[in-house]
Amino acid sequence: MKRIAITGFPQSGKTIMSHALAAMSGFDVATCPPYPQLAVKYELSPERSKCQWPESFEYGLASFTERIIIEQNYEDRYISDGSVLNELVWLKCRYPQNELIYEQSMIHSLEHVVAEYTSSKYEYIFHLNAIDSSDIFDQCMKQTLNQYAIQYQSIDGSNKKEALKQIIDWLEIKPILSPGHSLLSTYNKLNYRNEDCN
Image (cartoon, rainbow, N blue to C red):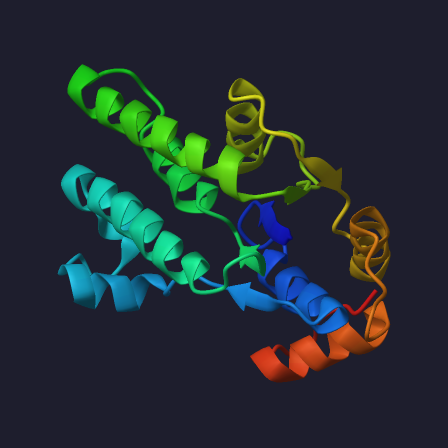
């Protein structure tokens, strides 16, 4: 079994890394529907940044539910782009203060459920470290992982080729493609431009 999650701060390259690792390993990528799709389905604000408390919590709960459904389709061999922790950490960063006890208790309740799922379902978690150590999302993600004693490997994602080599070595998988070829294939597949393929 190889249930893998790639986490990281926004713009960390976790989507590129997830798809490139899939190209190297032959695994499928489990990706949560993008916010606009969830917004239509759950009747949320068109822009995530404009969500107030009720919609923000509903989005966090909806994305968790959608990820579970999607990941179940892949049984025991997949790479989760972001993992179920992604939107939870977004929610925690959006409402970091304990001013409203009711709201914080709801976040903590969701956090316990997400943490339990994470611990029981993902065999390997690779976290792409932020270049800026003061990045709030990065700090919150690591704090959540550490709080619930969830095992993970910190990876320097600034050099994607080297990061992929480290992950493949850790997983003890014989790669189908080289890191360079898998990255180029991923950039073409996702229509990324002017990306650094290091």
